[in-house]
Amino acid sequence: MAFEGLADRLQNTIQKIRGKGKVNEADVKEMMREVRLALLEADVNFKVVKDFVKKVSERSVGQEVLKSLTPGQQVIKIVNEELTELMGGEQSKIAVSNRPPTVIMMVGLQGAGKTTTSGKLANLLRKKYNRKPLLAAADIYRPAAIKQLETLGKQLSMPVFSLGDQVSPVEIARQAIAKAKEDHNDYVLIDTAGRLHVDEALMDELKDIKELTKPDEIFLVVDAMTGQDAVNVAQSFNEQLGLTGVVLTKLDGDTRGGAALSIRAVTQTPIKFVGMGEKMDAIEPFHPERMASRILGMGDVLTLIEKAQANVDEEKAKELEQKMRTASFTLDDFLEQLGQVRNLGPLDELLKMMPGANKIKGLNNLQIDEKQIAHVEAIIQSMTTSEKAQPETINSSRKRRIAKGSGRTVPEVNRLLKQFEEMKKMMKQMAGMQQKGKKKGGFKLPFKPF
Image: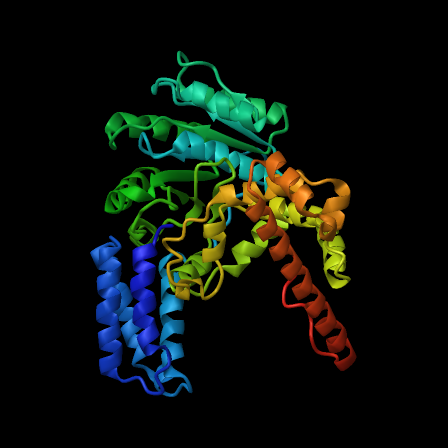
């Protein structure tokens, strides 16, 4: 994920100050030197770094730290607050027009991922916000841009408005809005043309579309991998079009993350969404406070919970909790759990959202082999219904049959059965503790199953 280098540097720096009973000016100065270097290395704009360090330094040698019971913790709190502020303070929500459809103009340079992001955003609007979007293909210059949007539309079962590449983009946008009104679509996402660099012809055309459509949002799509260039592009587009938001793509890649920290400060334009991968659901609203928390190694439990809520059946979760309490959890239930966890996204990304994950050695280099989960699923699927319900009945000949049926080995089958048995024992113990707690009025299950 982005910010890895920055996160490591900042976490090591704040670790040194975390437990200090007293914090003096020299401590703060030393910490700020490290913070400055970390931010510059992450490709954060020089002026942004200077202002950030100044603000944190001033607050860290002030009364709120010196009089605090835990000065080290207080400094970390200040860094967290200022980092959040740097990225926009609070989440900037997407506009909703009083007179539908809400019009969103998607702009940006060629290659930033504008067309794909338009599809992802339309998908998010439908799934998360229960909206009915229409995609409009107004990029008539890039070969196959219209075809790409239509393919995405088919893939998502999403309507796409197109008049081919012989009609002006302004006319396409005008007719798309008329079509949306007719079909009661409440959002129109206009996928506009890009160039390899900012030029006058491109800007004139975008200004014409803006003039005609009076969009509620103008989103600039920028590739986070381009670092400082992304900030310059954002500044240029903002000066000429008046952006309302930025969508950062490829924030999951090997990027130093400086763009995300600089764009908001330099342009005063909020980052509204971030692209976190290739899949069509790999886009999420940008929460400055959660991103700051992740950078400082404090986890991002809220996003984890939201992912779980979006992908988990509430009724099944209650049923499963009951089975865990009564220790009647079967291999079938386990199989279902695996499926639900896989729906949440790549496991290494989920782990990094856990508080304290930064302290797990080697987590950044951890390669979780999703194939292992597929192997476990294959083994369980090769069992009969009664074997899944009563794994203790699986003898040697049955193990050989299961191994053969799943294309795995007998030791792998043994390992899975042993782990499952240990898991059930743990559930039994926890259920027992839960009952004791009820009598004493204290203990609750330390987790709620997905």
